[in-house]
Amino acid sequence: MARAGGERVRRLFQRAADAGSLGGVIFEGIGAVLLAVGTALASGVLTIADVLIVPLSALTGAVGDLIDAIFGGAAQIIDIGALATALSIGPGGMFNLGPLTFALAIGSVLLGLYVVVAYLSEEPTGNFFPGIPFDIPTPGFTGPEEDEDT
Image 1 (cartoon, rainbow, N blue to C red):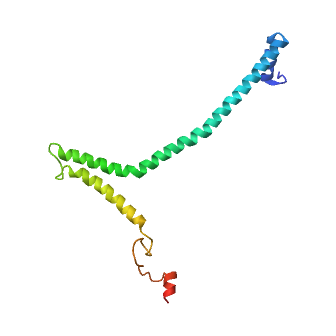
Image 2 (image 1 turned 60 degrees about the horizontal axis):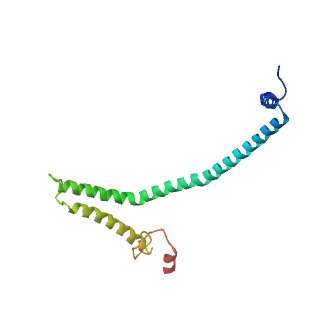
Image 3 (image 1 turned 180 degrees about the horizontal axis):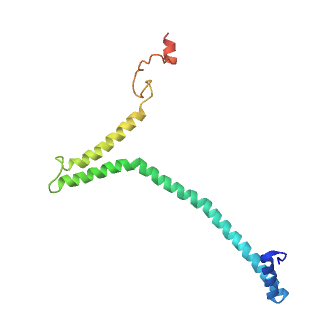
């Protein structure tokens, strides 16, 4: 036979009956309220910490990936150049360039960076590639400069 209130309410009344006095019931009630307030405060602090910690950890991971993407390729070229230098200097060296292999690896990285910087520093003057001082004729495509000539 089902009773009104459910199991939870019956446990609450049983605890009140086990307390033995009105003071015991009040003491357990105050303790339950303090426990609920403490739990809510702890949950709030953990929520605020998660709001700060989760995005910051994602940001640090993304910054690490960005640094690896920017400098990782150049570092790998220099690392392979150093390895090739070590192999060419050692007994039974593989390459004829010897210690110059490492300098060539660093030079190739610096030359690549120079080409990128030179490309980006040129003014866009041509119709196809920046840095070309003239337009390449494109039949059928006219722009404002071609309209002014006629």
